[in-house]
Length: 78
Image (tube, rainbow, N blue to C red; front, side):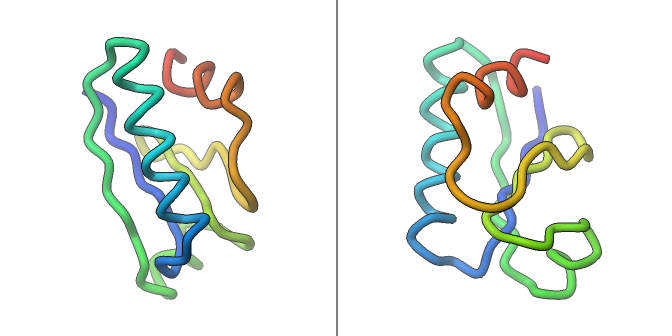
């Protein structure tokens, strides 16, 4: 099971990003645990300079704006 964190203050883009991760993981048949992180200190400590940010298994793979669906699939399968 992949551990995924979505970093952001709780804005609409952050909510959409978390839902995109869940949807794409389900479409790919992957089991994931998605955690939303909204604490500004945790976001900064993760190295996210622009939200939303995504980390998969502890590795930051995206920051700023909605992720591209094809890239998201690649990150989830990687």
